[in-house]
Length: 134
Image (cartoon, rainbow, N blue to C red):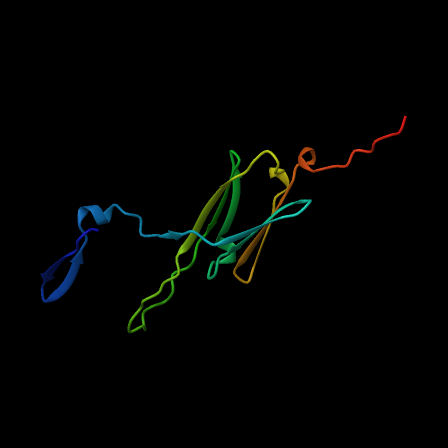
């Protein structure tokens, strides 16, 4: 943990960050909780992202890695006497196997919940083979 130093300048107090703290990124991420359901058609991933701005929810797939990222806008704390809890932005990644058709992934964000539909690729779906009597 970096230490802050306090300097007095012309009667006003200023907080000066140490060199280590100045290089840190101010944004923090938390891992959102998810539920994953499997059906015959594919996987459904339900992620809780409370407080996230719908326009700042980002879902992408690159090199078979599914990335969920959502930015939570900073709350106005100017009138708060004491703040003990702050929402943070969200970040989570999953590695996708060959069974998932990455081109057909769908996402919907509603009321703080992100729902992803990850359909199985056609070759990965189970199928019944009819046996013919000879």
